[in-house]
Length: 212
Image (cartoon, rainbow, N blue to C red; front, side, top):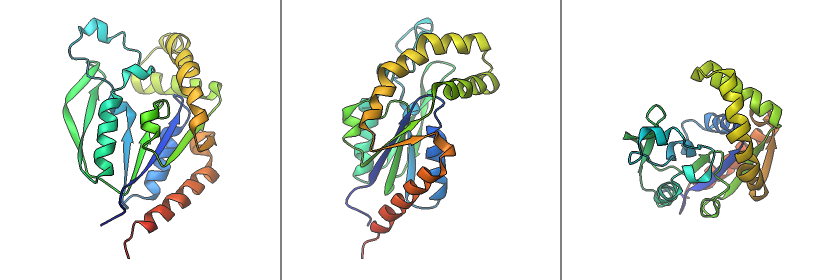
């Protein structure tokens, strides 16, 4: 038996902020322990009922793009030490895949995503709320590098998307959610001091899961 309920840590931040690096650094430190990662990106809404042309217009940086109802239901299951079937999103078809990923419950759940602090219902399930805060110029350069190298996008399309979608959504929804964070981590994965502090805190939590 572990604790009465797992500990949920939310890690938010803008696209290219380094939140994924922070999440992975924490997770890697505890690999083999009772810890799991839950990415909000897996919980984009099923769009199979929409024509493909409509799906192409999806704004993936808007809160309404996410199926938070399912995400919340899954976190509540994990809090009761019940396994979940995590959805998979097909970015080529712009809808949810038929496959799922079986996830066993753990003592620590790390929930990572650009808008995990935006929804009060999600925040209310978290024990620790982090926001990775990185300057806009660094974030856009990282996004350019990723989208051009890894996703085969043109420079023009990345800039167009940033100006028309990413930046306004960041200013409207992501940046304001920073106020709900318990801890703000500047410069993401490069901030080894902040990561060490979180590792120490989680280590303490994990020690407390041992029932005497």
